[in-house]
Image (tube, rainbow, N blue to C red; front, side, top):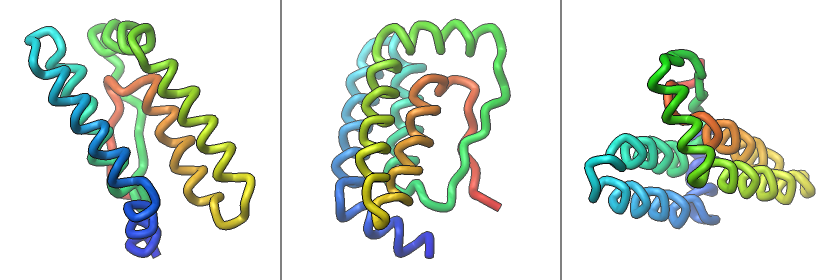
Length: 123
């Protein structure tokens, strides 16, 4: 079932979203200071490409992760979170779109705190 949902996700916008995150990661990695943010963008791109069957675990919150999360929220994480929530609500308005809406809500949580988050296969 996850394979079918991932294929539908890619066809209906997931590929475009993943390419956007990939481009953002490349642009962030141009500067040495932006490399940690760029690596998180690559993590997002991988998750956005095939989100079904994966879970996000928030744990490893060191002081460095907290500081980077605060900077991330200020520079764009809050906007990404609000956008993901809006897309999630829009998808959940239809019965067919509910699984896609739930994925957008997963992205909203990750958009707020990407540093220290780990993406694993769902059990």
